Length: 69
Image 1 (cartoon, one colour):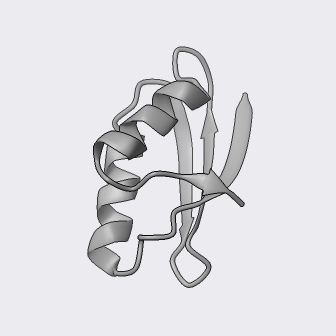
Image 2 (cartoon, one colour; image 1 turned 45 degrees about the vertical axis):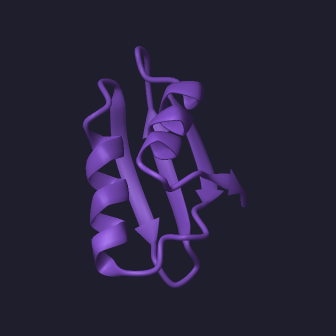
């Protein structure tokens, strides 16, 4: 199991949080998604077949690109 915490700078409202969480949760292998809206931080826990490049690509596709926390 892998875990990564990263910042999503343009995640500013509850709708953004819902979109980010919902899209990541749909990736096969994602086990848990925790979102801290005030800090704009997301923590994702996953296992195979999910991977960080897959999660990162999904966030870029939906216009919420991640940056290192």
